[in-house]
Length: 170
Picture 1 (cartoon, rainbow, N blue to C red):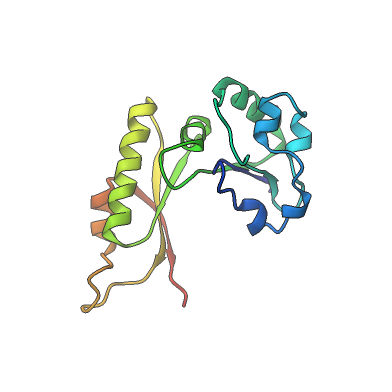
Picture 2 (cartoon, rainbow, N blue to C red):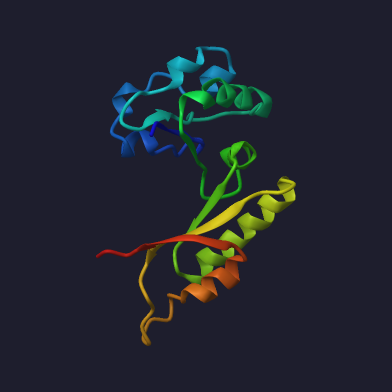
């Protein structure tokens, strides 16, 4: 399967570092939006392809961003939008561009409440979003751990349907 990651974390982009392609970044998606390059120039090819985020972006034109995605959509089996943790910058572009939104949280109450806030923002922005929950670094809470909560509590707090659980393996 052919996969593309579009980094939407403006200013704090890290996908190029995680994919070990920082030295190959010449353009980002904002360069395409500002007509400084074509779509192909923004894509860093690899096992997983990447379109990096810009260091800064003033006004983001969603229609132009959508045209970028439409130009490459048929070339990929999956396009993943890596959105920032908060509800700023690239967040809105990511949710408007996605067919499925995966909200990722850990098993602590504060993170779950923040995911609920994000879910509320998504539902105010989109008419009928498909939002699912992934719980990352999960370990069953022991009697002595107050900061972790169980799976049922997480689902109740986030008000989202559970898509998957990634266990804490250390």
